[in-house]
Length: 309
Image (cartoon, rainbow, N blue to C red; front, side, top):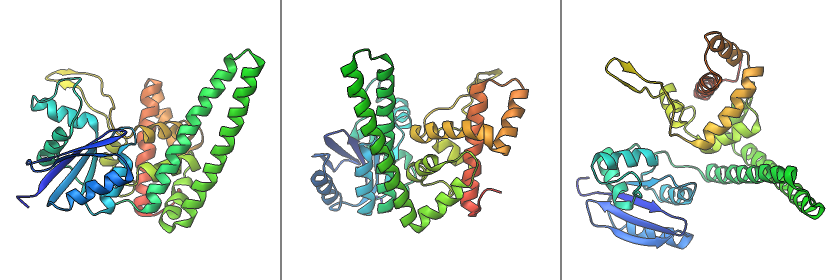
């Protein structure tokens, strides 16, 4: 495959910029169904080894899904990883945008492992879960506005919007539940995840939607994917404070809430948290460690196909 192209796709809200390494492919198409079909048609006229996109707040998801459905090895790369790569080559200043050519060179040099193709049910679930999360965010904002509103007409307007949002969220919950139950694989995984104290339907749905690799990775890999792997900062004899970064923010957010619940109701996580607290660990350190431990447990349960015991 020495003559194969490594393709980078710079995803924006309205457009897709495409480049390759080695050079041979350069085009721009609308970020629409028709535009993505044109992109796939163009790619099929070449030998393509790998396509890399940057994670851009969800705009990349339909692009990645269509590319995977068309049979192309596709990776959605962490922007920080691509930026560090480009800066290491001296090709990207701190604030420069990551463009298609940078992504193409990243694909050629790093050759990140492609993810497995998502099923149509998986893609639908991810879209429903993302929409639910958006509405919950809007609901929180409206409740905050209601707390500050004085004028009766304004309060009435906000309350009306809150009622509508609550109905929409309930409707989405029903849709998500029906979709999971209608798919044998998703239903089996959901039953396993929700058997764990601290893991409810929303946590399970988020993990199924946005961490589909769960159950197929080792503990280090799954922690890194969620952005929960500790990174050491040290040089010689000096050792800085370890921290976490990167990974899938939506997954990390829902794991935070699950860890808070598990810290109260899950005997394994509760004992683990108490041990760390007895060592004088700060709350942030304790809850992050609980998130990581809970995720590792869930990964092991899905891998073995066993419920909580």
